[in-house]
Length: 39
Image (cartoon, rainbow, N blue to C red):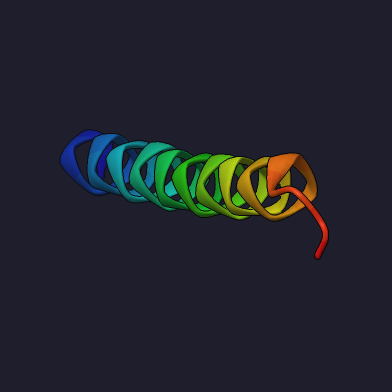
């Protein structure tokens, strides 16, 4: 039981980390797009 709870916690942490990474990637992409000199 305890092991299952620990595994679930790890999975939740992993999912949160992946979400944060994706969000950060999107933000840096947006920043790059915005900092491009508009022709």
